[in-house]
Image 1 (spheres, rainbow, N blue to C red):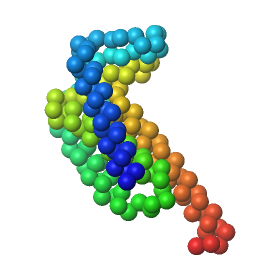
Image 2: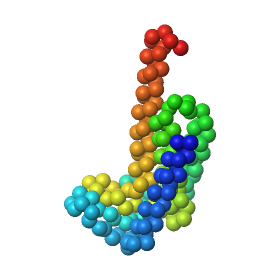
Image 3: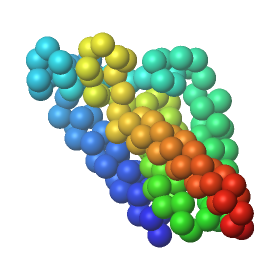
Image 4: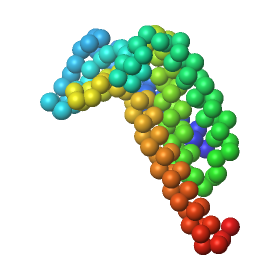
Length: 155
């Protein structure tokens, strides 16, 4: 349930934020929120993170679909006690679907979070990164606990 809830919440937050940006700002427009640190800047990204592999829309659509299907299939085998991993996979899949919708709909991803020292990104990107970090931490933590159980003779 946690997986589904975080996936849906991530997708909704991503798509609503992108709707607000595209309906209230012109492409390229930038608004200082906490100048000089944080701005809302509306850009269309033709590639992946940092604009890598620009204009490879079909490739990213295919990869996103494969990742989401892989997560949905693999999720079923995830132990129930791996709570953070369930959350992480919800964040990753919600973010991946959010950016996938942009690529299918307009051929680019809508980005708007601008810290000026980093390329502009969006809530879906943020969810994917946080989800990946949570997943790594949970796998590491659970592997460590399993190793301690084995070392202590309990199985």
